[in-house]
Amino acid sequence: MEKYDVAIIGSGPGGYVCAIRCAQLGFKTALIEKYDTLGGTCLNVGCIPSKALLDSSEHYHQAAHDFTEHGIQLKDLKVDFKQMINRKRGVVEQTVGGIDYLMKKNKVTVYNGMGSFKDANTIQIAGKKKEEIQADKVVIATGSKPSSLPFIKIDKKRVITSTEALELDKLPKSMVIIGGGVIGLELGSVYARLGTEVSVVEFMDRIIPGMDGDMSKELLKSLKKLGIKFYLKHKVKEVKAAASKVTVKADDPKGAEVSLDAEYCLVSVGRRPYTDGLGLEKAGLQTDDRGRIEVNDHLQTKVSHIYAIGDVVKGAMLAHKAEEEGTFVAEVMNGEQPHIDYNLIPNVVYTWPEVAGVGQTEEQLKEAKVAYKKGSFPFKASGRARASMDTDGLIKVLADKETDEILGVHMCGPRAADMIAEAVVAMEYRASAEDISRMSHAHPTFTEAFKEAALAATDNRAIHI
Image (tube, rainbow, N blue to C red):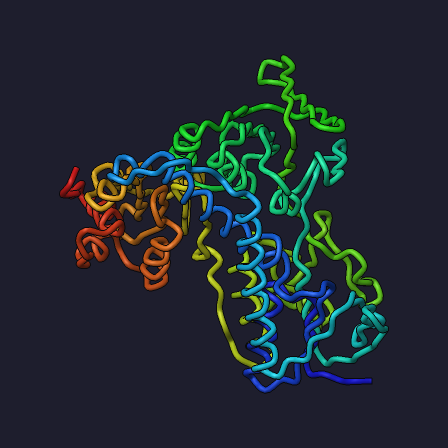
């Protein structure tokens, strides 16, 4: 039986990054993956394929709606949906292939098959052949799966999850999305741009409820321009699939029934930790009431040599959070003292305009009774945004009222997913709004809006509004 210093179960962003870091630190490392390809949900049926389709659909939407204004004339513009899906598959294959290369480069041994505990140090692998390995330390990085509602039967034909929504064989005429969170809105915007009639049913009173309220309002306005219909404060009570359509019934805020018919219903009500079949009890572990594995500040379970990271533990279900935890655990096991500031892990929605935030939202600061000041700057006042016709949205800076330290930065606008990194760097080094306002930002750029928002937070000194 082969013995390893570290065995990692699950090859998503948390697992494969952990494997690479362990190998860099000199550990003999094994990576166990249930499926035939590495990369987990993110690379295969999540982050990467959805971004590929988001990009393709945005190109089409710009060609259909903006190119004439730019002086570009097109004839017979149409969507080749099968080619979009094929391009997406190619992006996934290339990305997954890159992970295979990295495993070989770092001499990580990969096992394909379902990994489960035989005991706390022995892992059974049920693949094309049954194998067992032993490890001094084990990292659980098995990720998450789409959640549903108890009364909804996901048949993967008419009632689908994000996985199936990324693999449809033809462009649907209509789609109802249950859930106004990140995944539902990203996929909803893909199809709305391509001409699908999209309706979003959300139980809460706003979309992307975990993010800053002003960003929610800005994104709602933009998505309505795409033609997406929103049913906020609606409680879904029935989803019924037929051969060629789905009927979704929900109660509106006054209790009146609303019935929506569509070709597909995308259930996007969140994700749940995936620990099915792991045999946790054989290792002396169990999950909490939300299916998560309990860990301490070192991401160590109650069985001291077993760690857990990513979506199976508490915290935001984000690929980059899992990556940070993968590196963190490898270094902890090596006797180092790494650190993760969870307050400074950014959150992003890859619609267009994009939404991104880091630190505290305005609602959180109010709830905590923190004295703060704020400044904002709209993209309609940005020369770079006007040049590219990306004038929706704004940037908001929240700073401590007394010290001026930045407490939160929230953006809805072009390239927010990339621009938020500047805010993360600033907050990592405890920068003040004044610090950002005195940094030179190239002109014309989208990032000037961050400087202007910081100026607005500093004695209302914004220049261009």
